[in-house]
Length: 90
Ligand code: SF4
Ligand code: SF4
Image 1 (cartoon, rainbow, N blue to C red):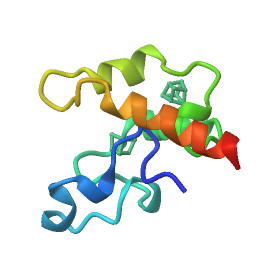
Image 2 (cartoon, rainbow, N blue to C red; image 1 turned 120 degrees about the vertical axis):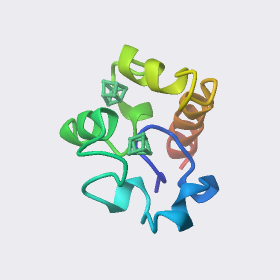
Image 3 (cartoon, rainbow, N blue to C red; image 1 turned 120 degrees about the horizontal axis):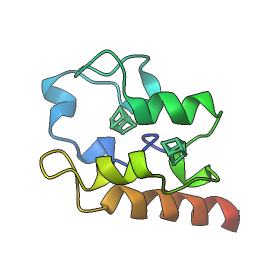
Image 4 (cartoon, rainbow, N blue to C red; image 1 turned 135 degrees about the vertical axis):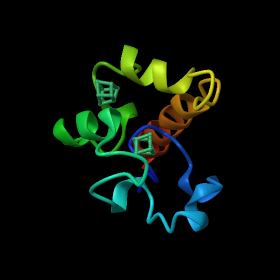
């Protein structure tokens, strides 16, 4: 099961304990705002994570992944790819 919709590894996130966050896929509302557009979009399409989406990697996900402050240089996009590979190997 993926840890997040966008490919972020919640288990490696420094806010997890600090904010008592259950992780992206286990919460209805992120601790940092009313909603996450990536989470909402992905769940709205009924996908487990963005890597399962026909539009992957879309402009919105790209923006999140390469955001100068909150992004991770595209690592979450690679993580979605890795999850998709794991799934197709089963
Ligand atoms: S950015 Fe959105 S989709 Fe990604 S882990 Fe956070 S809440 Fe989930
Ligand atoms: S890749 Fe983009 S369009 Fe597809 S589920 Fe994720 S955010 Fe939505």
